[in-house]
Length: 475
Ligand SMILES: Cc1cc2nc3c(=O)[nH]c(=O)nc-3n(C[C@H](O)[C@H](O)[C@H](O)COP(=O)(O)OP(=O)(O)OC[C@H]3O[C@@H](n4cnc5c(N)ncnc54)[C@H](O)[C@@H]3O)c2cc1C
Ligand SMILES: NC(=O)c1ccc[n+]([C@@H]2O[C@H](COP(=O)([O-])OP(=O)(O)OC[C@H]3O[C@@H](n4cnc5c(N)ncnc54)[C@H](O)[C@@H]3O)[C@@H](O)[C@H]2O)c1
Image (cartoon, rainbow, N blue to C red; front, side, top):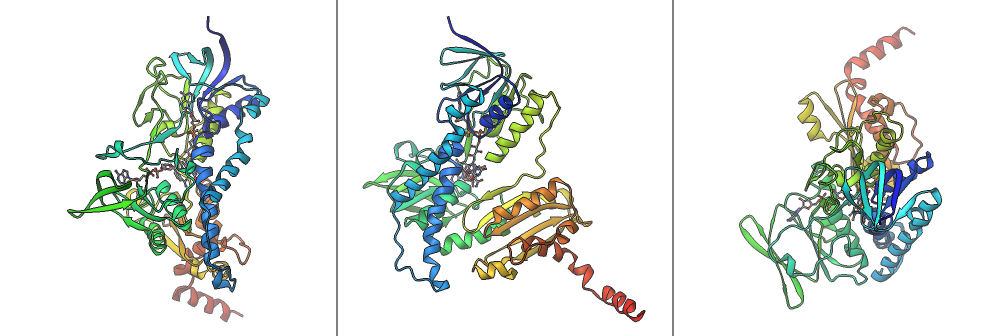
């Protein structure tokens, strides 16, 4: 006879989304069962954001040391120790892990089951032989690497995000298929740590971002010696004398790229298999679990959040979804998702950050009735002082100054985008940013200056000059 556990909320998956629901719900007085089949913390902690940013921190330390001579600092030849960099990665994960651990969640009051969960019906999940019956379920099973059906791929060894952070030897030549955020962050990290790197992208790199911003990243990666093959088709992959050969086609010509290691970073697949979703009457497809704007599935007692819904695959979105579900499931409030001010950042150096509408999507929505203003890092005194003058900020508004979107490519772009997220979510006009007092000298002044540039045509023109001269004549 299976043990039956009755609870208020049952959360499946202890990644960014599931942990946020579980921690919030239990601290607000709900009985919570949390089920995780793998490592607590999910992708973000173990195989995603945390290891990738830790590896980038190590690699940026190397590139900063190489650039130190411009400040009169002599370091001698910079050498890198790949295994040591990976030790840093491990230690950052270990540092954060207690926050996501079974112990912490049990202390908070959750019942944690470390096993695979599967629905047996619309109101019951089974895990580790225990039948969990809950008033509400939250599916937060995330996503996993999607491997494209390239001829020969099954017969060659390759990394995905699940294995690359286990590697302790710097690849001689890392070939990366996919020029999205994972591909480019890993390309730069490995290049800076001493590997030769080639990126193969079927469209253009970072195809979801503003091409003007992406151009700065492209220049930087190429200047660092990364080979980029864009708009190419990957035909075949094979091993040859212990090396990996990737055959691509560009403009009708076949090119062979030979490398020591291969990383596949071609996007993600929502984890919907073996969950018993049919038994639970939850509608899904390979693109994810279908949810409405309150994150309810076709079974109204079951919510789905984060990567498994196939939406915007970011840790901050899984956390945001968790907040929506808590309001719906615990407080019965009809809270709805709003994606008008979702920021995202690619953590290359320089960083690329966007929020709201890009220039292209604003044009599609509003036609010519938009205004675009830019300001460059080269005009910012702090950027000059720190020799970080590459990049610019671009802001898109309505003709009346309502902020529609902002994109930043440059040093610390990810830290700067928050202001614009707030401005868009609070429906602010550009005048609010122009009127803000920004401390000098900070990169934060970029935001104020770009907002000021919005007023330049109307402030510094003949009409204003005439008005000022007239007023001055009055005494
Ligand atoms: C290399 C990389 C870098 C990234 N960098 C960033 C970044 O810098 N910033 C950012 O915002 N996002 C980043 N992301 C994306 C981010 O990691 C994900 O969007 C986020 O982890 C999604 O959270 P989630 O809760 O939906 O899923 P996950 O974190 O994947 O958690 C899902 C959990 O569910 C468990 N599970 C699955 N099926 C079952 C089952 N049947 N029973 C029990 N448990 C189950 C899994 O084991 C897993 O632990 C990155 C991703 C990758 C791969
Ligand atoms: N900094 C961040 O926030 C961050 C970092 C890494 C990952 N992520 C999240 O994880 C998700 C997955 O990242 P990703 O980079 O794997 O996915 P992605 O979907 O963003 O990018 C994959 C890239 O691979 C290309 N591609 C697909 N098939 C290909 C093929 N056969 N040959 C050549 N190119 C091919 C696509 O055109 C695309 O540019 C992202 O969408 C993002 O949501 C976020």
